[in-house]
Length: 409
Image: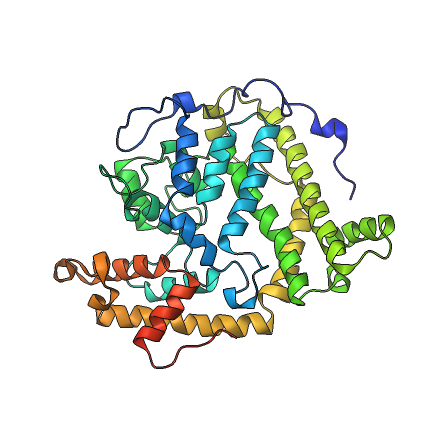
């Protein structure tokens, strides 16, 4: 596979001039659920970004698992460092198409707010525990966080983000409802999202703006490449193993040809950064072709395009799918990772059962007005409490309530 040519990277206003006609304009934002006067110094999307960064949920990402748990070393990525890396890629891609960089950054920064402690392991267990109470979905939980659970402002709960940031958060991976059938595109739509849309319609049967689409594919690029870096550091992956995949093999051959004898640390970083560059350039080239095919004259044309416009090329999509399969087989399902995940499952399952049995043990605002809650409402409160925990706090709570707590080793 050849890198994208300079000619391909040129075209629809590549990073030059005024905002593209199909960009999301902060001056024409659909506003916020609660009316607020506009800032004299920041655009609406800059305010969203700043509110996200200053939130409690953002700080908690520092101690939430990406792949490796906190005890395994300070150099592995957490949800916070992953989120920052996603936002950097999203801004770069938005700049390439003269979009609103602040909106792309805001969606990238908020996209993991709903994740539980212990990564996807915690989410899977919490979804299982909530099986009779509407389930658990991290995207829906992120919406709860920014519309209800954050308590910072005198006049409203949540962060009161703009419609555009909220719709980007909820449907950055595509519509949740099929416009023709009214059925969920990936199964039933979480009640949290449906209930919110009944009050503030996020048009979940349409596509998100291009800024949100680019934030979503930036997430794929970041975790595909940086998880390789962490896997090499942890010794779960080797360079010989990476050669099993067509894309990393090609990148490794480039690195080894140009820098023979390079030490393994630099070799890994050089491979990772070249993988990012290759994927970013591919997205720019293919998205340019997708835009040329429909020639959107406004953001409304992007919403109604009927397909995702920010994509990999078919060739890169196949290589990326192969890479994901490789990572699942060799890293995410590695015996050492699975062993620790099994221990993390026990922590989340134990905590859910304990707080359902004695909800007053949550303490603080979480233990307020408990007699007024029916069982589904109580379960949702417990899920909110658990989902907001960091890995370290979940372990501390388990030690407080139980005689023995897994050490996650």
